[in-house]
Image (cartoon, rainbow over all chains, first blue to last red; front, side, top):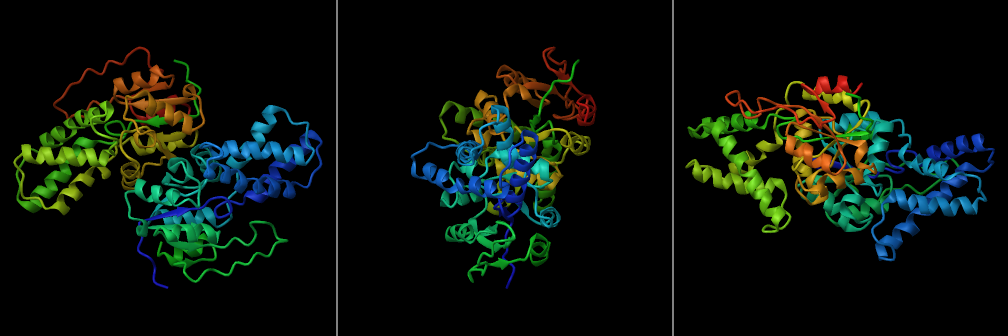
Length: 237
Length: 237
């Protein structure tokens, strides 16, 4: 495949750059130990993440006004705690547990790959996470973003075309000079539809070792890479 | 002075972090050499910068709709070229000269100071420059921002209170946990008025060695530092 000529790479973050499932489950487990709560914390993480799309759909449809992801995470947390019968957390503990999404660990190739890519390209987030969440996570995980784009600056959640197009516009670049990097094919296809280039980096462990998702890449993607270090090599960075 | 307890430092950029006057004059001089144009390029830089406030005032007053700084710079450039009798530039050369603002050189203490501060604080821009301008300048000058805040994300030009308050809100921080860093006292006073902490870093050479501006700091500032390295020391970073 010829390398697409782009100036900026923009990244899906949850699942693509960071391992949300292990990180959230570990935070739950630590809190559980302190509080004497027993639970399947991986299932807890999955259930919490499962609230993500339905809540964003409410924003997309207008049922909810614009609401930042931190707040949607909190609304999801309250539901999941009820479903798991966890009733002993204080308000401060809930606030802190909700911030687990600010403390997600990167996949092992993410930071080295991003540093190589940063020398050649503008690197931005194209996540549904809000600016505070993305900024705190970058400090926590050492992610060297040049800028935070995505849902909050566009006031629209992916896969709304507005999210991708606002990002390109804020970079003052035509969409075809921007490449979307994601582990999720629907995200890439939505970006591609409005003119962005696409790089697929499958993350087979996103939902744990017990899952075997179909990761056969759509043939339309410009680049398919095994991880971020491979992506850097393929992009000549 | 006791060190203010803050989580984030947000920075004025033109004049505070980068030396716009020397950088723009040098770009003009280089272009002039290529094109055989003689001019006082420092005066050219001053005149161009002089268009900045009047154009922003038109946006603040509603006479112009929201317009990003790159575009205001371009409108100013067209006027200044006319005033200096420079008529031989092609459209591509004008576009490139306008991007001189994306290629400003930092003061010598800026990058080392920012790296020390970055280890302890969130560092954001609180500039009237748009996201593309700030992002490209950061790549060019090696400025390690964690996030780009300021006028474009707020759709309001400083010293509008909305610019500062939107930045704090996007960081999910109360204004008093954010410190504004600037070489311009009016910027600091406007930030202070809406609750931000303030650090004054005078830049006596901003308008050239021939100027001797009154840099006596307002006694209300929380920190006064000689440069960014001193600021890092004072902030315990």
